[in-house]
Image (cartoon, rainbow, N blue to C red; front, side, top):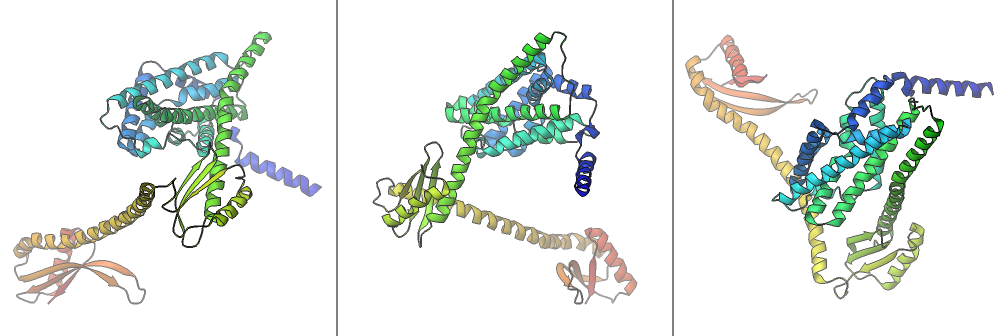
Length: 451
């Protein structure tokens, strides 16, 4: 029993020493004041936001990751979202009203600005960076929650570091809004709803993280002289928080179910639809309809084999899912053009990977070739200078060679200068020529070989 108590005390001491956030807690009033200031969006703050939206829209349009990251770094969108979480944590109804007002204004400005940009841009095709923001996953929920926790922890402690810019990049509030603007400009409601949903998820969970951080760090909550008014304010805040959270929680639960369904479907396809000499060339998993469509190529799989695989779907928690297996050219659901498209897609992916590997190899070989060509050019350049400095030199040839130490097998690259003279030089003159070549070629090691 005594040993158990000592263990408990040791664990508590460890937690206090290494994990207690309150040790590094900054001035509470300064932290609250900095978040309050970030809530207001007027004048310069709003113009910075508009410029950031144009930057992010341009980056999404031309598929430039660097431009998108730059836009996220200068965007002040985090302010109102953290303000909502802070207001719930402090029971500050006035701050909540201001934060929600700024949140709706900034959201409206962002969507409007990006819509205007995409209405007039000559590049109408949706790039991969833009498409990545149209279908949120469960990972986005965790990223937003963890990013929000990192943000409020950094703001509340003395060592701010570069956490806030990192949170701005990781949680990615700006790109989904710009993608929503693209959806409106192109008339694609699916893109708009998917992107806006991602933005809403990020906003809610950053606010939730801020609220949790404020409570864990024991920020002083607002006290009211009128207790009845305090009770009403607390009730309003709870109602607004619940109304805001409920759709997000419902959608998140639905997202988790969809992610589990997709994961189970992929495992089922890999384990149970793998037949000898037959390849899965395409698969489509519909979370909403709970349907799995698989296209096979190769020797035809019998109906008995397919039914045997269907019976095992319950093992993967896919009992209610519908399985459609398409194979053979006579299948009405899969015409020749569909098969050709699937094969070409697979061929394109494999070819793209091979081309990338080949290009990397070519780049390496070109870099090596350039190093050797450099010596040819330098030889032609330094010959006139050498003729003036060392008249007895009759010929010179330069190259790069790999030198191997026999004992240690250590390899190194060394420059070799093979020279012939009208009159045999002394060691002192060869040493001077060697030092001159090192300085002239800007390399550490040159070996002079006299013929």
